[in-house]
Length: 507
Image (cartoon, rainbow, N blue to C red; front, top):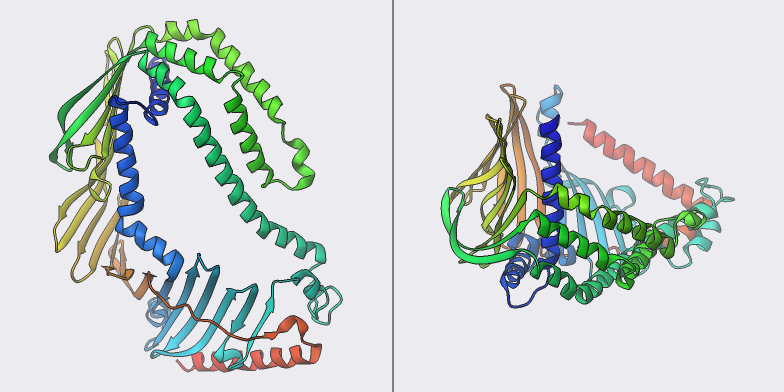
């Protein structure tokens, strides 16, 4: 139990020191910290602006589609005594975030010919649906302008012949809920802007706390990444326990009665209010109440600084940021905390760059005068050429080592083999991964478990970056239709659905 408490104390001390160091690294002068900040910014920029995957996902959201496609015939054949089914099901979502349009298309095809289809289109303050299989060339929909009034006065309203049992209050609540999403997004953005503005005002003071305590050095070094030595610039920060206590004290004094902190709390409360119904708003505390609570906690912290200083008296802290010489990115972090004969070393590696990963790993080594513990989890790329990609995920828990997953991908043919092992059982998947100019396709063809292989035909997820969105055009306003027209439409849909079932029954 004593060792567990000791490890907890070391971990808590590491967290406190690392938090203080992270704040300092966010903004700095022409010092070692500026080097770390520049490397972190470079990593972020490479990930968000230079990543092929991120760029493709952004294009999918603005001018593309996401499709889930299944070979239903083969899939049914794997679980039922049927054969010869030539059926494919597809559901495809289109997005135009900038234009405020979206569409959802569902299809069941036989031999490549559609036998059941549905297109839901949302744009221009309207929602419409079409289906050649259910109601031919006709299109039905409604306007979202004055929707509440139109719905209440339609045959689907509370007093309508086809009433759905939905009250005006239910519709109003649903509309308010949708509207709240936009409000919440605005509040989150406002909070982010407030935090950034406040940080710009506080960083010099926080930086001074870090600069006036501890030491830092910058040196040339190497870091093992994926089994290879990568040249790095290592920026190291070291502190005694007494210096960490001074940083904590200074941070608490800076936060007490701070108008910038109050401004952040105000923005947080405004964001939270958008998630609460108006009748529950009285449960939220006022900003002044929160500040009183925080100041009370700060006073308790300041009163216990001497105790903290005593607890940290024999501690030594070392934080090393590993920056790739070639990539100029932050590719690793080593934290070394020691107290006499006891130590914890935590290490994270992710590189040699965010867009060229050979290793992602996290390890913890703990030692005291009686015993030692080693734990790590690693994703290692063992081969990455123009033709082949191989990688493995493994872990070690105090000598208990195991492979968790393996991946082998033929980049030219797209053939993909992957396996996952859990509690001694391995599940293997064969499929395809095609990374093309305007699309990414991930498909599963078969699954093997406990020596049994199941052919699923093809279950594919397809991301397209350049896909033309289908539209419905002019529509008949279903909220303006009388009960007789709606009855005729429902009968038509029922008969068409029976025809579809009959066609499916032929297989």
